[in-house]
Length: 154
Image (tube, rainbow, N blue to C red; front, side, top):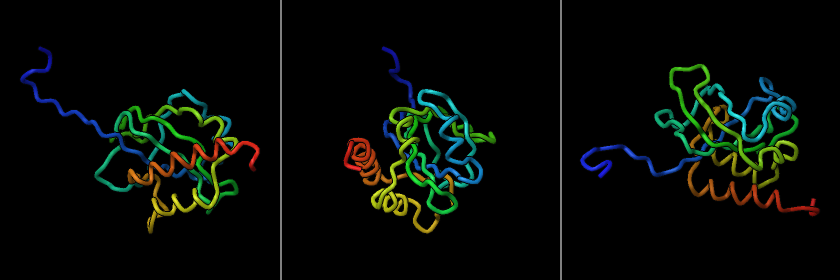
């Protein structure tokens, strides 16, 4: 029987992360024309919270631009983590997924999005990557779905 008698570390919990993109280094216009759903990317990560945790394959990453330092804040998309290479200058490997192509054209930014981002970042708003609490993840998913389904209610 395969696997009998072997001890394997199996990670069954999916985590979610929030990645703050620097509008000065990577402006929203560049994100819009370079990032497309289903493409693989490797990005640098400045500082992350918590320091001991690292993204794992299958984790979800939400990408956002902050209001500070940019003119078009919001949630721009999400992705699935493919790998994390600790000793690389670009440790985060990911694949963007739907509805990222829509969100990059119409980023989710309203009072609820701002409140969630502030809850995640807390006192440490200058970091690049945060692990997101499961309760907030649910709120992020609902917020994205609501933003997408608002149709002509703009």
